[in-house]
Image (cartoon, rainbow, N blue to C red; front, side, top):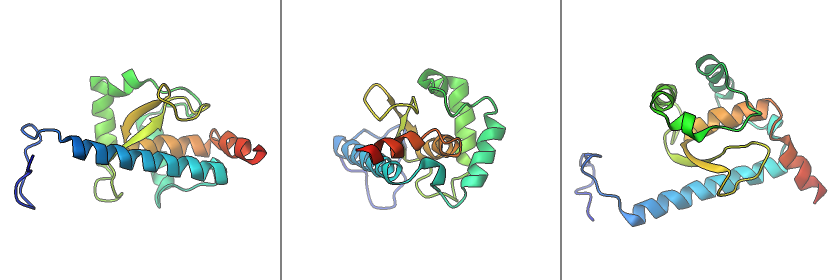
Length: 152
């Protein structure tokens, strides 16, 4: 499939999914997942900074999602419901010109007490990942990964 000349506008409603493009996105998401997990194994999550604006992202998450509990398992159904999508869309849009790949697809653990697995992973956009993982790291929820890796 050809997307047309470079720089041409693509209508997302008319665009076909190319298996090669989907595979490239999947590979990039898995590389990001592996990189993040490796960081957590080498550094306590509570000591990590994921972006230059972690403080702002964390405060924004607390304002927009005051009931978010970083120790709890995320409900994929809630996040992907019509109201959940709308709320997250507004949240993510704030970072459009400020965070590289802000809306790029990535993998997010549902239960922070467990590793990435098929059952414990959902597809999310990068800013959802950043916001949730920054909150988890600030709460020390991800420190177990480092502690477990040091025992090995």
